[in-house]
Length: 589
Ligand SMILES: [Zn+2]
Image 1 (cartoon, rainbow, N blue to C red):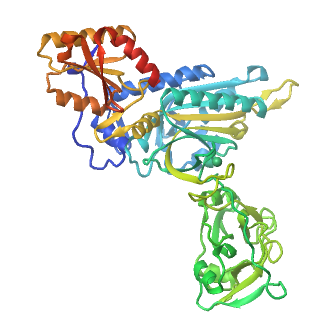
Image 2 (cartoon, rainbow, N blue to C red; image 1 turned 90 degrees about the vertical axis):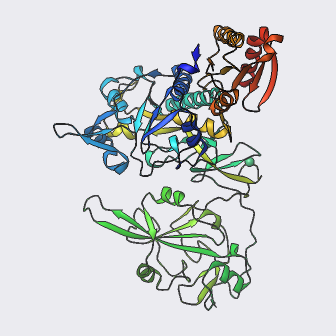
């Protein structure tokens, strides 16, 4: 049995000055972790013990669907050149040179290494499908490490990769991971959501994020309490109620109206006595694209139209145009619209019909909320004037209708119509359908049933090991500390003799601890010669879900069992302690 008096559990009264989130404060205070440098942490006894339990859960569930590897962290540049990520990852990739001057990097993920193995070893459809995974350190040179273990430069990840002969095979591998992830997070006692996600720089198609709601989160999640709908901001939509369009004025053609000095949506709507919902918001942006062949940067106008009361979601825009954008400068606005800002609109400009072909023309992206609307109002591209009677597709021709608007809390769920909520959340896992992006680029080929060469299709699947612990702390803490689910706590039960100088108490405590340990429970004995208050304070702090106080009632044959989460105290007969915990821990699991 572990005895506290012999262990190194450096608890602190004060949290680090820079700690803002609960998990950062408490993991340091509880002696789980110590910072070595910005975003780099040492895991001490309690922390490592908890991580080992998390890794064991992950390993057990992953072993049901895949095979564990252990891959190098140090990678040669050539591999990352072959995948195209040497350039793509920029400053986020830790780079170094070996003594011969060869470029190397520290792995952020292992697509390249796994694909290299597949490329060299897999020859036939008969060898597929394969699911390979590992649990290993990863590196990312975060520009601003913070929040303790939430944004770090070295972390542990379970990363898995599947190789299938075709898309139907990938569907099966993907579903296996989805189910395994649910089992892992259930067993780790987390309250999580599965969210449709944008796969961003990874360049895949279908993808899901596993998220835990917490104020410490840096992501925003849109979800519905009425049904299962959940999505990240980049994917989220909402139901829009049918709109009353304005009646056409005059002969129905675009009608110029004098709006002196009225520039903002609200000013114009008020001035004309209409709702901002009948007004078009015109955003003038520039895309900067580097020409691969000439190496020159080319700018192209990208104009976005939104309903007057809607906001642009930049991630949706980035997803749609796949290049970086910035607001147009004054001169650029003048050149395209021939008008000062405040009176911009889509009429009278030749927009690209096909943005891949008409690359010399500016692009007009119209948010889907404006599709089918009529008699809208927009700037006239003339100082102090706006245009009425504008109908998309009639008075101007969008390059494309795209979902670009940001969803806001309280809007209607697209599935059931109930009000949507938006909460900060932390990502604990992510699964992607990668496709053939890596296998194609790196030249992995196998023969299919007909003897034809095909490219295997990949999926990739990550779990942040530290994220599981931090999310668990974030979701279960109070002013005195935190409590972990028994499955991932460093110990399940702390047995606390009230006074170790009283030999009968100490003996009873050792006896109870030994019986619990023999029954398979993970027990620590707080045998320190300290006042009970000090020991209770530490026990409340360090995340152990149950405490047994061994005190005076021992003479009556009972001890107190304290449930850390609710502080519920119950007298339990010493002879029934093991039975009690069999029930209590089962109820918690
Ligand atoms: Zn709903």
